[in-house]
Length: 116
Image 1: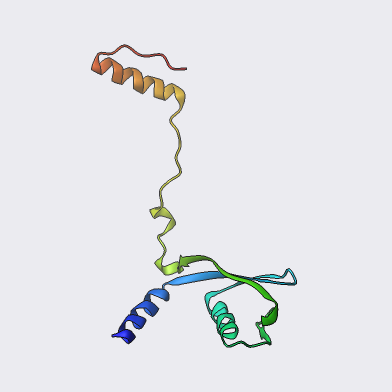
Image 2: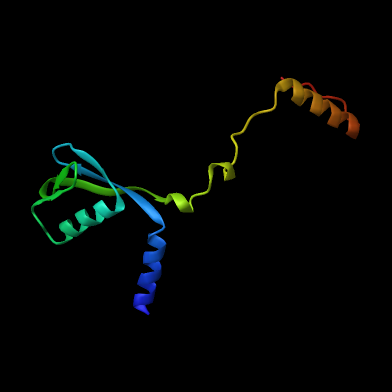
């Protein structure tokens, strides 16, 4: 049963990408992907004292001051397309609003109230 739960969690976790931040004592700041962050987590958990070498940079484990998850988001195929998102709000021009308000007030039998 435990293995089944772990498998389900792993499948759900595979749908997400993560952005991790590492800040060093030497004021260096690095952004890591989910896989890179897992390597750093394992090194810290095992008490390693060396550096982890990536293609374009290295993170010296003894100098890690902060290590945290910045954001978690769905991978590209799982995201909603841009057209499915709500359009930005555009207010009605004041003249058109006054015309609509006058029509409604005339239909319900109330005189038009003045607005500032």
